Image (tube, rainbow, N blue to C red; front, side):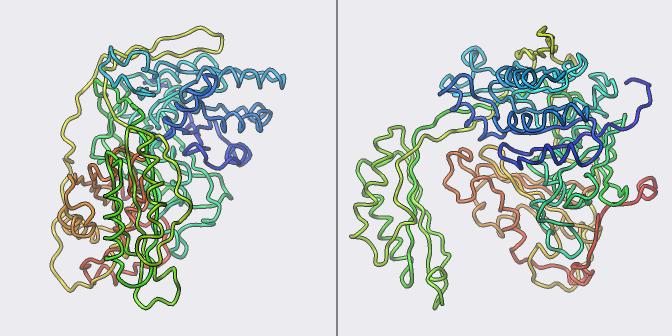
Length: 592
């Protein structure tokens, strides 16, 4: 690592997904000082959407909203001198870079653009042993291609598929002159990147305790987050002064647990030991992330493989009043008798009805019928058949809307290829290229079990049956077919209870939908948290699944609503009092 002492680098976020707040770029540029402004535009489903767009028009395939944002703010970008780094290139980073250069030339501004490529493995599917029917196959690249672009003086860098944190790691690595084996520093920047890459989720968006008095300032319009990263990789998560939302230990913890698995969080440039992270209070809306430890990266790169699995059709019917189960059984039998029969069907009755209801909505249940088939004609016939028995089924039957035609559905499949099988290229502002060598120092992922001690079981005492959410926060999300739920608490007593009470068996009991699925459980003692990975809950991914919450966004809130025996002392512990950064220690406490 360079010995030069430099001030922390301020890296802001302006997008957590393709479709995030359009005004965020201007808000962040006008809101205060920044060195870099970054954006994450690519989710697994987004890659499929962009692939289909590019299939129709080879000039497309990138996040068009980013191009519009830049166009709306180009003079401001030049005036403020803030460099932009975004993965908005999607499946066509070169096309986006060309479009940006055209904009800059039209405005007569002196800004340079570079891009990163090499993630697109579609031309090499057979060679690499990947699904040759794939519509898109993209390796998750790391930060060093972006670093080369920044070293060459680029003002705007766009990439295709890189890991979400890489757009934050790269500016820090460039700013401080990190070497590729500065694993602790890189890991620290990965932690900061993981927190801010989902935008407002770090400042109170989608936050379990959003309505606790004094917890989140202006939850109606949260600001976007900033990471102030130091030379050693430690960071402070904050936001522009005067913007909405709040940065607390809770908001940062929630995001650290989002869409992760175990203690080792692998990336192309390093593996972050998540269980070593600690949070300390650094002032209002300032939470410091300490203790990052890194290891050499794994020898493989993850590949996002998206393919068309066939055709999907969905029909929703409503069942009102008495005899709901009998009504559902009748219409299920009618669906089962459809000819031609789809290759796969899923018929789900959701008992949203209540007895003796005073509104029709409250008296009504929902039955969702989904069909999948390789043949579009068969999938289309599914909804036509549903219409045909509309007057010959259970009493009171009605549809949510006219049954649709089928549409293609995508399937996300993760794959892995050797790091040295991928050619990672930085295309510099002058058009020359720099090839990023694969790491020579790699380490296979070891055990995900934390080496940190588990707290002792609490002394038994009186309990009260109460919602888990009275004492615990949660955040959930998806990774392909799997879901994760991170659960955290705010003090040591609650942590001791949570660790011993919320087991895999207890989770299966609280969420019966998971009863027959493989579940992994991981502990994060320094975050006072446990994390569950539920394998296969989401079918074959968001574009395929029949689950009504296909990305498991509400799964954690369902868990928090379930009742469990909670020590009375925890509920008496002023659980509803206003608090900011409730489980962050002070700097002096952290050093003890």
